[in-house]
Image (cartoon, rainbow, N blue to C red):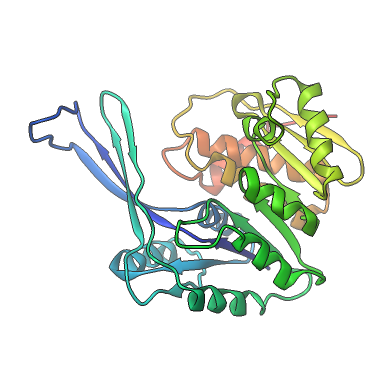
Length: 304
């Protein structure tokens, strides 16, 4: 069983207009709402791949109920903590003569709410996976990742972490099964640029020395490199296609790796499915469906 945690989920309201100007009424041609949040995206792809999972985190108000309804309609199981006040945030994405993103703050989360989540996480069983992904909202303490991991430390739970900077570094001492920085985030962790294979491998090995078992470095159109816990280094390229959507590609890749490893216990096959999921989402208007993932999976090969 896989559990995902999204501390600051969102509804994304995507609007399309012919143009955007100040001082006048701008009218949209199209508007649609989607669920958002890194852990939630992982749960969605896992569900489409037939992997049992449950999405956890915090929701609030009518926007939270709508987000949960959308997930349920998409076949995603969830068990969120509902906050007593506030609203799950709405992020506005405007596609016009440019792309504009307006991300809102999340609701206030109390210490009592944090304890409710920690108690729920305590129900996770040995052999399960826990995915913690995304940023920490302002109302939560900066060490909330550590509090979660320390509460579950010492049990046979595979931690998967997708976060930036200090959040990721603080998690390494808990020996996560998998971390997934992109090549820019990897370089930022060490104050350098990582552009070549050799540079990526060098600093990914540094993360392994600090505690990570497996390090998956995504490289956008250049594919990905995996350093596994058996000292293996495996690369994979992308397939050719038209980029439609970059949102959720990394989350899709993370979900594909978990699903691939659960099903095959092979790191090379996990990487192949990870790349297929990331590619499929990039070529889709939103998170990829199973048919597109399987199509791309069939033409991908790993390079050892």
